[in-house]
Each structure stands twice: as structure tokens, then as C-alpha cells.
Length: 373
Image 1 (cartoon, helix red, strand yellow):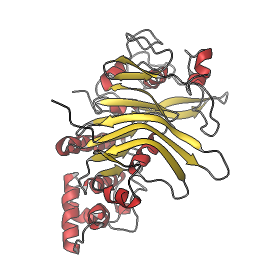
Image 2 (spheres, one colour):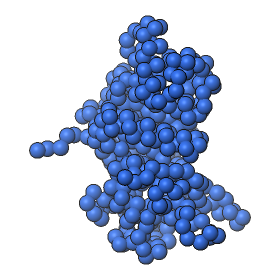
Image 3 (cartoon, rainbow, N blue to C red):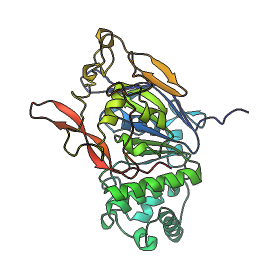
Image 4 (tube, rainbow, N blue to C red):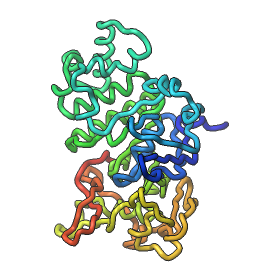
């Protein structure tokens, strides 16, 4: 018996942004991933690693001033999106693929009532009367647990809290019954308790609707217990991918291990320095040969700065792009098993900070995660 084909199948995707008067920026390099129906794939990495560009490339939406070229393949339910016409891509938006945007404060139109925005994916394809549009909006808002949906459907976005606005965004994304949901850091700017509520809501609809979900975040701890698999991105490349438990407990790439070490722990000494990743992410406008993480990697040698490492298997479904992957029994730094904080504890979101010496490092700020079942 053969397995069902993936809802999203990305193969060898390269994306270049052509800037006025400059060389093109190579923002995605040989990205390959697949998501099945009902599955959540988490994509994690620092700001500038290419996570949002990947989502927007799948969606086919970029800035009006950006000119991009792509090579490779993006198949949605077997249909190649890169070769589809602009009209066909527009038909797929909202009905086959939808997106929950990063910032609920700005992703909604401030001068349009909630009901119209929630039902936009439907009204673009068939005419709805005013009463039918309002009734549909109320049903969708109720499905994402918006209290008093009749009143909120008639409201403007500025009358709602950030958490309610994000629920409105989720309702709008689900309105057309898509097969693929792209969630681009959906908990940005939300309180930690609201973050968990929003993520639980996405989990519930993924399971009940059989949604293939691409969950983008820079908080690797947020994915624990939510995403079945993790893809770690750095400088537009997927440097490690595998089952969530495997990647978080036995990371093979030094960058993945560094992200995990940057997550604050509630155990251990009260006063201790927070581990950071020295250096800064690479400047894509100034590409350099070799492994992009080599300048920040304690395991790099002369070979790492002249050649890009190939992707190799280190376990069942676990792959890494590194010349010197960490030992399977440990994280390669402390010589012991890497694990996330205890259930119910706070985890962290990687963020850039500058030390007194002027060196930029990656640290973490608190957020919460779902407990492992």
C-alpha cells in the first residue's frame, strides 16, 4: 500500500531577488521539503534565514517592487505552482493555500469591518448578500472561539485586542477551506498566555480539517510537542531536518545545538550567563564560499570555508548539511543529551543583542510552549 502524496512538495527550490543596480540576492538555496495532510512542519531559524521568503514563494506573494526568479519545483496537490499562470495562482489563494500573517496589529485593513475581511476569500469567488456574508462571518469567528461573534463581526480591527485580531486572521485563512496553511510567526507581539491559545487553536483546526501546516518561528522551543518534524534554516538553506524529538534531543548541526542552548532553563544555578551564538548571520548581498555558518561555528576547519557541505542522513528521516555533525549521543558541546525545559516551563525566542564590545549575539526572550503529551 503506497502512502498518500504530500499536500506540499518543494524540490530543489532556489530564489533570487533582483535589486535595482545590484547583483541578485540568492535568498533560498536548494530548499527541499514536503508536508502531508494533517501534518505540521516547523521551520525555525534566526531573522533573515529565509523562512518568510519561503512562505511567500509558496504563496506567490511578494513586494510590488521586488522582482524574483525561481528554479526548482513547488507542487501543491500535484500542481506545479512555479509554472502556473498568474490567474491560476490567484484562484488557488484562499481555496487551496492560505496564510496567517505575522503581525495581527497590521495584517488586517483598519477601515474594513471584520465580517468583510473574514469572508473575503469567499466573496472573491461568488457573490454573497449582506446577510449571508454576516452569517458566514459569525460562524467562522465562532469556530475560532471569538467571544460574542455577532458583535465582533460588525467591529473594526482597532476595536479588538491583539489576540482577537489574530483569531480573525485565522478565521479569514480558514474561510476558503484550504488544504495548506502557512503560519508565519503567528504569535508575534502577543502575550505568552495568548500565544498558547492561538497555537492550540491552529492545532485543533489542523487535526479536525486535515490541514497541512507550515509553522514558521524563531523559537525552537515553541515547536516542541506541536510540529511532527522540524526544518532548521540558516542563510536561506535547510541545514537540518528530522523528527522533532530527534532534532531537539540529539541535534546534529552545530547551529541547531546553539539554538537549543540559547533557550532559558528554569533549572540549575540562579545566576548564570545565558548562552549566546557569537557573530552575526551572513550578509546575503556579500556571498562567501563555503558553509555559511562557518564564521560562527566552533567546529569549523579550513575545509568548511571553501565548500558547501552536502546533506547526509544521520538517522531515520534525520538529515544534516555539515562536514562535522555532532555525535548522535550528545550535543557536541557539553557532551550530554540536549533537551528542552521541563513541561510547563518558559522557553525562549532567539533575538539579537549587542554586547559592550560591539559583538552581536543571539540570546532569548521568554515565551511558552505546549506540554508534550
